[in-house]
Image (cartoon, rainbow, N blue to C red; front, top):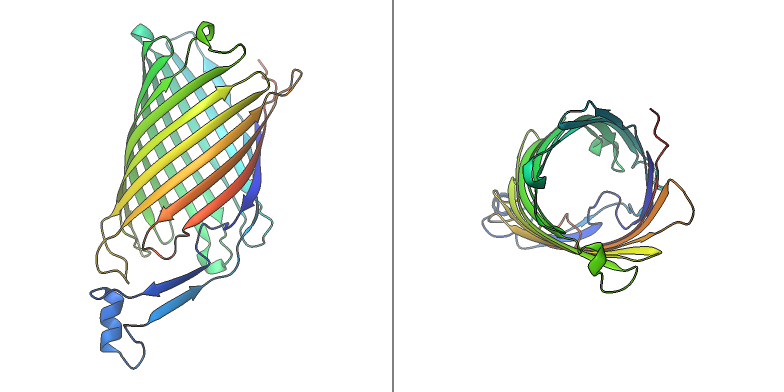
Length: 315
């Protein structure tokens, strides 16, 4: 499968371009300035500026999925993935590769067990050679799907991830639950119109170490969405709320801080006429962040186009 994802992003690196930083009394930098008053005033504010990094983002991804069906209760998939990032602004490109293995087993009473393991490596530029990232990652996930009746399914999952780069090592784990509600086809309240709903909760824990030490965090996540499937168009409405609590304080803050993120999104997926392997989606997202971390932008609005082409399978 070939995926092409493009769209406008106000910041290709998801950083605030301009910010004003004040040193809180009791913070590490406030203590340094208090001792070196001839060099800096702890009561003054500092303006941080960066280069403009908005632009048209472009990702190209090639997935070669191999299906193994041996007549057992297990279905196995092996998918090598190659990707390339080439945005319109120079100095923000990247490339990488990964290998993903998936296994599914169908259990009694319609339950399904899903296993995933993934490993890969990537290189990214962020507009400055000093901020180049060479990283490797590993990810594992287990998910159990439990049907409760027609059109009602629960998903219980747990995942682990490890990311290693030259200046930072990250490890995280996430536990989540999602409930899907899909009305049966014969009870749609309008001809050729169906609606579905999902809602989920999750807890995400992140620990970090290395020369570029950043604080670990614990997040609570709430998600919900509606999916309207019509004859010629599918519309998806998405909402996510994330409350994040950090374990250590930033250099200019006196205590560990909290951050709240709200993401609102819409997807428009047209039904293309004829027998085609091409799928198209248009996505609008608005992310709003409330945080004393001045490096994080307060608001980001993005427009994204996704084109996916599935090659005909070969025996």
